[in-house]
Each structure stands twice: as structure tokens, then as C-alpha cells.
Image (cartoon, rainbow, N blue to C red):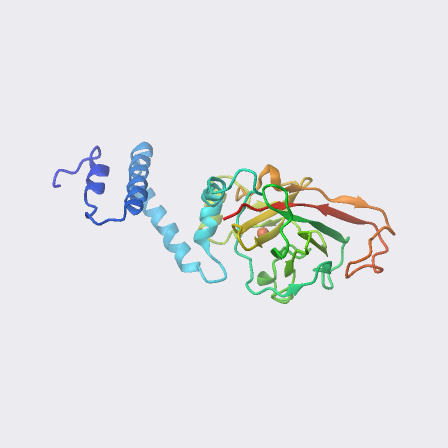
Length: 288
Ligand SMILES: [Fe+2]
């Protein structure tokens, strides 16, 4: 086509696909081009603005490493990651939520009732619940990969003073699908702001904060993996998570418990003299 115009460029683009193009690839690339072309016309994109966008992508590439992926963060703050999560969630199952960049592979196994706090001070929080199927039937031997920030607001990979496995652990549910561990409260934190994503947030008048949360990846044979987070109801950023990760069904509560009432059967049993908090949270997995 030699007579390309603003009106036919999308059609010309899709017309260039070869006859053996994978249909799903053609569908995705065709729709991407259609929306990009419409967006460009809608805002009347100038050369300077187009170049600024390319520069941001170039900068994102330059600072992306295995430990820090600026493209994932860009997807997160644009709402793309959460939208993908939401349209792929199954009704009735626990919602998925962003993985984030701080997961560490091969976390150490933890026994049921183990403690994640190491030497960090703070009120003891007992987190417990069941992993179930969509009919409420417990799933035995489901694996929970658990991680969170330390009370200083840092994940282990951000903090030279923490062991890389600090606040990371793998737990397996018992015959009743039950899991339980103790920890201290994770805290709210900011996403990294020293790259193009920080500039985008700044230009949009947006803050970089996320509400505090516990991360989970839950796996069980015959069920879809669940990547999710749970958030306390009283967090000041619950209604303004900068990566749009909060869902109604992922909100939990710290239930205050009086001093002297800590139960038996935990690594910390007999060692908790002060008041503590309990979180009860069940996960529902969908069969493959
Ligand atoms: Fe996180």
C-alpha cells in the first residue's frame, strides 16, 4: 500500500500479516495497533511527546535487572497487571493479585505453626486458615509460599541487613487443609521512584505507596496456582494502592487478643506474654 493515510493505517497494518500468522498473535497485534493508532489520533501526539515515551521505555530497559524490573512496575502502576489478574480470576475462587518484584525462589520450608519474625520486635500476629476448593472442601498438602516486608518496610532483597530468606517461607497444609504461622505486621511501602515510573507518578500527582500486605503463592495438585496478597482493613492506603492490587475478598482483619491467651501448638507457644493479634483467612482454589 503506497497511499497510507491516518484513516487506513490500521487496516494496512493488519493487511501486512502473512498467511501463516498465528490467529491469536494476529488478534492481539491487530487490536494493539488499532488502539495505539486511535490513541495517537485522539490525543494528537506530537513528535516531542512520542520521543518522551520512547525515552521512558529506553530508560526502563537500562535500569531493569533480574532483581528490579521497571517494565513490570510500569505495567503495575498503569493498572495493566491488575487488569490481567482480574480478567483471568475465576468467580468464587480467591482473587489473584500482583506478584510484585520481591519474591525469592526456593524459600526454606516451615513447619505448621512456625515463626517468620526471626529477631524482629513487634506484636506477634498469628495468621491461620484453610485452603479449600470451590465447594469448601479442605485441600490437604497445599503449598503456601509466604513473604512480606520486615517492620522496617524493606523486603529482604532490598535490605543488606536481612538474610535473603528473611520473612520468606514455604508451608504445607495438614490433612484438614489448615495452615498457621506467626509473624509481625508487614508495613506499607513505596514502589521504587528513581526511574521513569517515578517520573510518571510524579507528573500525574500520584503517590508511590502500597498498603501493607502478606504475599502468598498457593499451589496444590489438580488446582490452578494462586498468586495473591492479603491486606488489613485498617491500612491507610487500602483505597489508594498505587498498583491497584486490592480486592474486596483480599481484605483481612487483625483481631486483638489479650495477654496470656496465646495458644499451644506453635513455635512461640509459652513465649508470648503480651497481647497479640490473630488473622483468620481462608483461600479458595479453582480446579484446573
Ligand atoms: Fe509486596
